[in-house]
Each structure stands twice: as structure tokens, then as C-alpha cells.
Image 1 (spheres, rainbow, N blue to C red):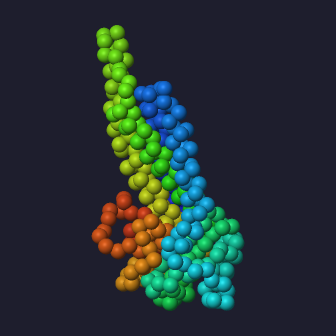
Image 2 (image 1 turned 45 degrees about the vertical axis):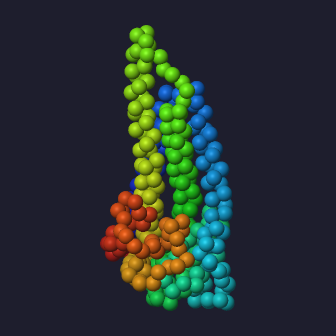
Length: 299
């Protein structure tokens, strides 16, 4: 169990490092080809940070509103409230706000920028269709997202993706529409050839970087799901509970009407049904891999 947690943290750090290498590499190429426009990088950072700022502080309210979730008090559902309260105490977290979505499809998500402003949201279907040990596994998973600051991490990753996209867009615009003309006489032919090579490399990098950035973002999301699974098993001391819950949620035939493409990545199991996509383009790891990892853990 501990090796699973360590491995997932290490892989997340590696992916973030690769992300930064892409940004630094694109910034370097841009500075070499367009030295007069080196201010583009800080501009891209500022623009991406501004857009992420609003998401960071208000995304939880937006998501809860979209999902039509309603906050509950202890008197509304004492059993659920005590379950969340006990696991929060065990994990050393303040009690998050608890919301319920009136939907018969079983699912759950957590949101909030930090443990002091956290929310756990579950559907009626989850409460009705899972046994206590399975429900504990799901709640433990969501508390682990809160404890690991996954919402904050995702905000940082989204900011990095935004920076890459803006830099790539600026680069391609300057490449195709810039009025600058490079000299091609014998005197600077060598320098011109170097510039052409850098330009070609820069164009390829600018086209591929946003795609690579999105793939890294999705890979980080999958790593954090694995990490939350492992942390939940550590918290509840019963990995089979979460494993059974994941299978029940995935196999349930009810469609979660409160979800959409903008919020699907938050849920413990992707609620969107339909065509299968490659795991490289998915926000969640394959269910079979999650269940296999949980069943292999020793407590």
C-alpha cells in the first residue's frame, strides 16, 4: 500500500517536471527566434494565471450549481454525516461540507481549493446502493483528494496547459503573420540557416506542445485517482470495500443526469457513457487497473 502511494507521488512529480521542460523549451525557442518579443512568456503566464484565479476560487460553487447539489446538515442524513465525520477525524481533516445530488445513479466527487473550503458530494444512488464498507471506501477516496490538495494541483496543471496553449498560439501567429523579413545574402547565410532550423523546430514544438500538455494533464489526473484509491485503502484499512464500490458504480445502468463533460473528471468513476476512448485521453484510469491495484494491496 505504501509503495503504491510513493510510486504515484513520484510519477506525478515526474509528469510536472516534464510539463515545465515543455514550457521552458518553447520559451527558449521563442526567445531565440524572436528576441524582441521575449515578453511573451510572462504575458502568457499572467493571462493564464488570471483565468485560473477565478476557477480556483469559484469552481466549487459553479460545479455544485451545475450538478444541482444541495447541502445537508446532520439531521438530514445522520448516518452519512457520521460516516464522513469519523473518516475526516481519522484522516486529520476538518469536516468538509456535505452535499447530495438527487440522482439514482451512484457516484461522488470532492471539490474545494483546500481542506478548510472542501466539499464532498454524493448522489442518492450511492447512499442507497452501496454497503457501509463500500461507501466508506468512496468517502475515503474523496477525502484523500482533499488531503492531497488535488483540486489545487489540477488548477496549477490547467494553468500550465493554458500557458503552453497561449505560447504556442503566439508563436505560430508570429511565424505566419510577422512582417519581419530575414536577410538571405551571403554575409549572413550561416546565421540564416541556423534561424531556419530553429524556426522549423519551433513550429513543430509549438504544434505538438499543447497536445503533449493535454496528455500530461490527463496522465496526472489518472495518477491522482490511483493515489486517492491507495490513500482511501490506507484510511479505511479495507481495500476490497473501495474495489467493490468502483465495480458497482461502473456497472450500474443508471445515467447520471447531473453530469456533463465539464464536470465528469471530478467524479470517482467517469459518469459519461458511450464510445470508449483510449486510456491516454481519459481522465480516469481503466477500472480494471484500479480494482487490480486495490486487490493487490496489503494492510
